[in-house]
Length: 220
Image 1 (tube, rainbow, N blue to C red):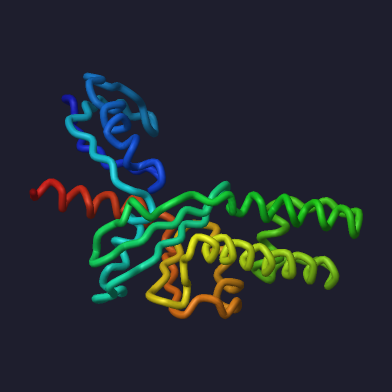
Image 2: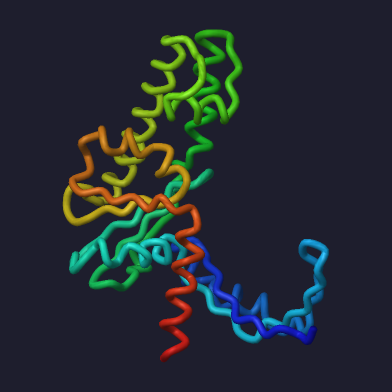
């Protein structure tokens, strides 16, 4: 088999995109032939073009049909370590009004584990917390209640951090993406602080969005 030419679409968090995207694109270029094996099959590729796009925006692109003609959309990407936010106006990412907050679900896990250990002398793992939030597993009502209370407080803290940045969740549409958003969906909806929330449940949404944005860029 000959060398396969590869056009690569990658992404960076919105807060770092403007300063780093060109360097990130160059990082993948000029490598020449790259050989590797996958499932006991040998491959040879060469990256002929690399384009970088903002994370969160890429995932939101997959929802554009659902967003309709909304003039303003806030995208909130809740990940493990951070919660990134980005505005989209008239379909364009507003990279001047984006940031990363230290409100990822790892913070929630650590808060819950510390509280449960202190109150009940019980060690919970992340999988235990996920199970409780999904209504699964066999845990005492007291532990379940504590996990639920801490999670609701965590979501409230996240929304307060956004409010401190003069971001109103009751005006315009809000798109939540990322594994953290899927886990916290019930608490986000029950908070009463988001007027119109949409959720991207596909964990591959960013990758699919990169493909869409690449195709658009390639036609220019």
